[in-house]
Image (cartoon, rainbow, N blue to C red):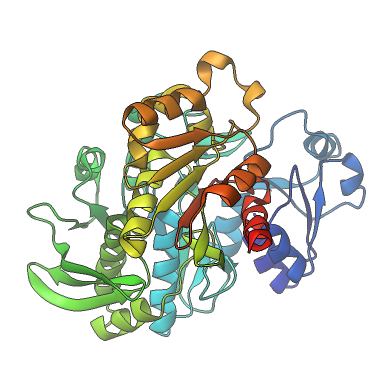
Length: 453
């Protein structure tokens, strides 16, 4: 929402908006572009009649601004509708989908096209450091959009990505997520199958052949399908991985023949999949391998993806958006590979609908294998879920302790910061993970570390 607001502001629209909470990095991003983001919903925010109301998918009937919009017959639409009609139109739509890695993969795609001189438009659910904004209209024929499987808005419960008219589609992985709107993995897979069915016969689908859920539906496509991964038969694959200079290097092969050597300031097997998918897309679109290689070498990453927020006395404080057990696991494995043999702390706020629920109660402990120390805070807004339906962080901690892992339940961010201030050692790496603001925990930790110097 924030990224599209800025893009429209740059096109000459007057923009204002509201949210329940407004926090960095999006709050500062909006402010820097002169957009007024009001905290809290009030009908008085809409007394001046706008041309359009764009309604986010977190809102529902009863919200005072939605009620005012409906009662006064204001023109309204969902964000995906806005993107399709105002941004994609008749351009070549590149949709990046999957349970994990969409933001990074979308940013990689946009940067590859930019380095190739294509001036792409894009909508990305984060802030790519190469662009310093998550959306722009662009001048070229390509528009890259992060295709989210979550529902569109209260009046349209289809997945967002079904609005984006894909010509080229990347499907990176399919796992159970969003237990608040999907009943099972079958429901999620059906939504991806519907997405596959939208790609025209002249389009292309690039898919992770290692993913069993994707393999169940990929033969439903009416267009060419191009595989990547490490399993036998993958058209695009990687080998000879090494970590060096804060990133990784590996060879990309097409039909077992080397295409290029990747050097990039990312880490983790999950990012190899991201890069393979985008490289396959780029070569299919005719982008030279040397252009792709240069793009990866200059790619700077995404805010809130293993982003170093500060360092005090050799202790790094890192922020990450991980919001699912698989994302936590892969993030920690990547951090361990980058910073080995330093001691790795994982600090997690169960905040997303997935982590707040009890669905992954017995699976979540397995996500912390790469961490040396684990801290869980209390569940965000826990009383909005019945006890039997919400994660029990104390049980997770007990499970980890039974596995001989040093793990701690510390309810609040302030208490976590105080605890870490006493326990961390020079050279430790602290990775804080939440899909929200985490109550400014990074600043609190850094403040206490500076105070103890």
